[in-house]
Length: 149
Image 1 (cartoon, one colour):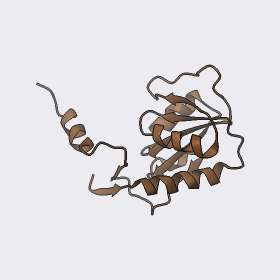
Image 2: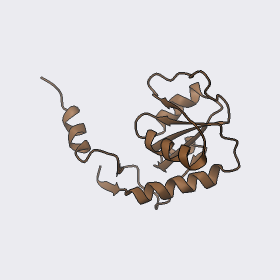
Image 3: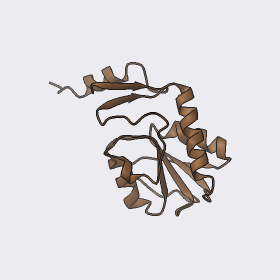
């Protein structure tokens, strides 16, 4: 990744405020965060909207949680929509849910119901660092992708 966008907590607060305004006319009964990056904005949104945080959704093994809204009253949030693969996977399982992401890259944007990007658009090759990301995350990721002998 040649470009980099380092976000502060104030950026996340602003993005979440934008999303709250965008969905204020929807009847949202529950919020679910996509594991891992979507959990922080889901928690912030839950508090801001007074709406229950009903689930953490793992896109590798999605499942309906008993008592969780299943239709347009469920908001599923992720931190970034990169290529749209996570939302595509979850959309196959939660067909009627509302999908939102705080930050969108060009290839992933068409898959979200709500695109919240208070910053100028980022290029597909931009690495977004969130305030909750470990400082050495990129280095750890690079090491984990090396072949093991």
